[in-house]
Length: 229
Length: 197
Image (cartoon, rainbow over all chains, first blue to last red):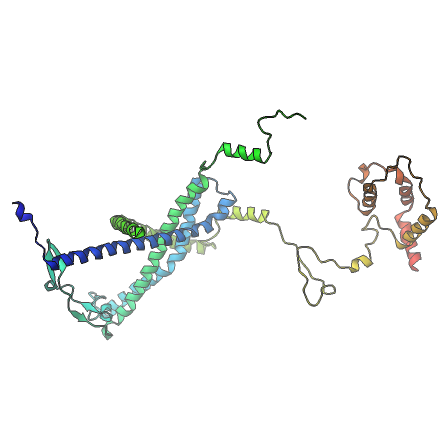
């Protein structure tokens, strides 16, 4: 029974496993750096909230956490509205354009990403959908051979609607995603500011240090006052 | 190398947390769309009532009022064409431009309570020249402090609301009496005579 569990690997299998592991590690490292970039960008976006609420906090018009959060939330949504109305307008325009196109041609099943009459006619496409190019390794379907090229970039007159719709929806979508990320970043910043600006902290405070500084500066007399005049 | 492994660990963490982040993003997208539509509708309503969606909040108005009250106002700087040099290398600061011509024609007596006309100044100088005597040197050799002369000057250079409260200076009482005897209207008439009017 135990020998059924023994695995025999050929040299090719070993090389394949090593290559897969390296690719996996690189993918994780890339995701890590991307995440770090996103974190830094969100910190920068969150700082924009400081500009909006600084006057009110500095002049002490707002003096507690609850009031600050209520005020900052209003400001945050206003800033989101100002940032997002253009991309939403672009998305609405793209959708309306596609609806008008489908209504005029009476083709409601039109696929904008079709390789023959869609946007993907502009890209190199390989036949990744064909099972003939895959094999099973430990029950996992893995690519065994690089698939054949099925499409080269070329313009198709019938795909004119997708050439307008897909770029518009992509730009609008990415722009809206950016403003949504800013909204989330400012919300996080709001919670951080509410505690840093209004919570009292005794970190680094020491009564002994203050007393020593005062004695050194002669602001208060030393403890031993037996001075003969 | 350490940073490489840190990034690898961070990558694994982000991959594990990605589904939760995606759910948060989808929820925020849905809420934001609803809030956006609400704000559009609210903006339309406010527009037709003559207001704007981005009007200052009450807290903003209070903060602006406090900031305006605390910031000092800049004085109006007006340049005098007769006085300002043509090469404009004068540094304009917050101090007002002083016209030297004002010193040649001093303010009339109704504006300057200690105004002494020219003819009276000449008369006083003549009297002082005739009446000067050497004062005896005091035996204890205590010199007059300079502060008294400064105070004496100040008393005649400016006036304040507290003039009545000042103690009379006995040494200068005689001189003060001489000034008291002269009236303002007499000065005006005599000034005209002096100027040949």
